[in-house]
Image 1 (spheres, one colour):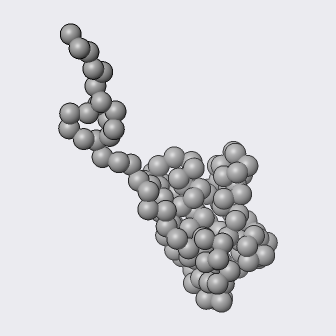
Image 2 (cartoon, one colour):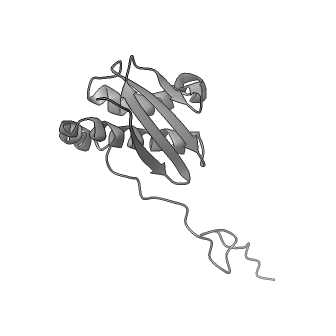
Length: 129
């Protein structure tokens, strides 16, 4: 691989741009170490998951630009983006990543607010008199 590969991951309102290149396993999110940016261990595991699946956690350097949403949405968007970037590097990773479910975008989003309701499903308080 002569140059870096890139991909985009999305989840709810979060969007991440992923830049992957050969390296020694450094993962950076918005110019910070990913363990500093994602303080919760399960979010760190989400980011590492595609690399662990193909057993190359220490073979690639990953730079992530994350924007929008919350930390969990950004971590899951990064997971999808890293999986897509790994396919750019080597298409033979596809069966393993697909079996693990890392190539499917989560389609769920916020339900719209309906008129006559306080929120999407919550109604105003009812009073008989």
